[in-house]
Image 1 (cartoon, rainbow, N blue to C red):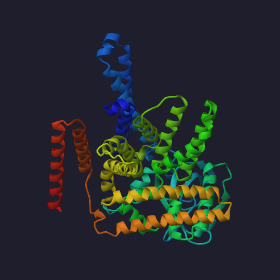
Image 2: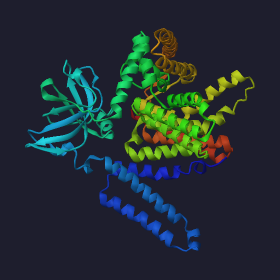
Image 3: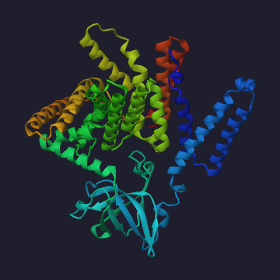
Image 4: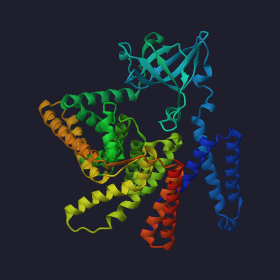
Length: 535
């Protein structure tokens, strides 16, 4: 039993970075305070290296303290770089009457109930005839009509209305769109009628996103061509491209209630399936070192393009970074641990986008993989099965159960519900969605052959029909989901502490771990009882 911090030494560097991100987000210290932390860490590091070898041995903790303080400061600096209060060139600094805003559409407008919505970057403002470069993104809502249908990615517009701050949510129980948008670096929104903006063509400069949007539109059109049922086509589109706007709200709720929402949301599971498929396709290039290098390079390029095509969600980027480390390790004959690759990917993702720490997809993705790494093998070894088919069936159950252990508290906290039938639902949904995904990839390859594509499309539609019918059947049970769960953050932390104590007792059989688990369970019960009587 190797300790976790030995298998994942990078995890010790991740913790102070996260602490710095949290401290900057909630405390918001000044730049002077951050500089003091940086100098303090530097002082520890310098003092340690000035010591003699004898004193270095007995005071080795000084170097560690300096490194941790430095990483703590790095976390604060990463958040500071994304905060509005430190952005002197944000367009909100130039709010004046008779100002013209030059905007660039960053994603094709999406139809909503009463308008079209898009995210756009404001690159310049024109004040008194002067063109001033600015930055910042904004939500734009366009009036429905024929004019908005001509907008596309990279369309350039001139707008004369002043963007408005996104108002905070008045209902504490509802989704806080203001906080969500701020974590995406967006603080303003604007509704535009047809006469509020002037179109100035399209930005023709090279952008990989433009080609990815075109590829996604082409893939969606192929799916609609060979899968006739709109509901099944929407699931197929979500499976292949991550585009979920065509999904029916009731269908999404049905998958969420059965604990299989990860099937129709592009995640690390989909990327893993594609990675395994690509390894199988390009296995003929393993004959020499140069050919093997070419194979890994091609696979990595395809994986990164797929992750960008699907929108670059936190779980997908996490997976593609991990696979990148695995591929590089293969090329240099260095086999690293999954735990360490997980910590490294989280470290670099948080350095680039620190607000991912509050992203639900980021949290669930890392919790699921960490849960698989920690619990899968112990759960699988609890039951020994001799029959190969039954052993495979039990292994699938073990994977599903282990992935739920660390993700379940987060699901209860964020979604306020507990899916009861997640085990039978995943036993059918995972193999069916895997076959459907491979079928969709095959459909794209044979899309030029109408006859072959017709049969492949029918098979994929049939697989999705079975999956939807089974999810609907399970969701129909009154006990399929427990609603009304509303734990606070302290209870979720206690739940994780209880999981730690009970799992440690299972592995080590030490009495104090059992006592710690029972005590934590008792405290949780007291908190729930107190909240019940308070309500």
